[in-house]
Amino acid sequence: MKMIEKFAFCFAALALTATSAFAQSADWQKQVARIIGSKQTYPRTAQMRGEEGTARVKVYVGAGGQIERAELVAPSGSSTLDKEAVAMPTRAGSVPPPPGGATAIIVPVTWKLL
Image 1 (cartoon, helix red, strand yellow):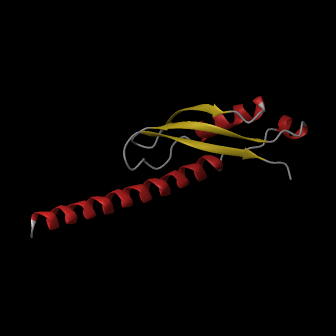
Image 2: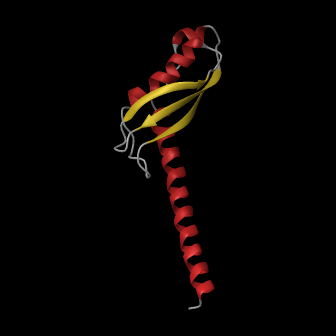
């Protein structure tokens, strides 16, 4: 192989690996959002007041998948819903281990009255 061909081959292999890792990460993020979302409740007081909104929570996940902590990064407009959003990851407890080691993910949580 010529030097340019070797470089092109290595670059293509690297791009394939990066794409695969990204797909894995996107799938992992969706899975984590589903697990945390399964712990969502609609606080009774917020329902009675007609409160709706979307909160964004940053969730810190350890290398083994344990939820280490969560913090509110964008409020919903309701302190009751915000408290619920921050509590949800703790109730989940753990998630599958992140593909690249310890990380943080931002999860949107939406409440809408029907």
